[in-house]
Length: 97
Image (tube, rainbow, N blue to C red):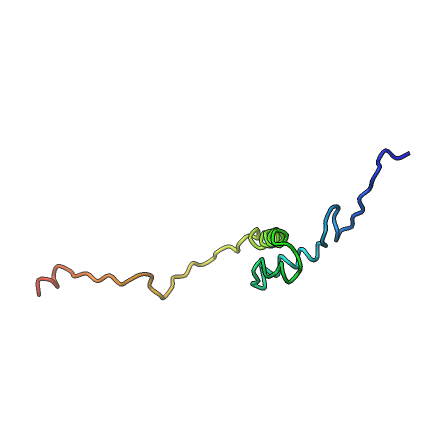
């Protein structure tokens, strides 16, 4: 006789205890991350709750944020100036010489 009284069936796309598929959760996260949708709009469109879509977005965003940045080989200087131009007079120009 088996000591276990109940079993939870699970597959890769539907983990044990999950109410939505992994594919739907990933689609919700990508909709906010890549399509520029708001969390509430994605939740309404996909008939999910706001917390579910927010968790999916955080997981999806981690995929992008955790990727290492490429190494900088050359650092360039912009042709634009930041801030206002500061003018000053030299002592020779002030004396009129």
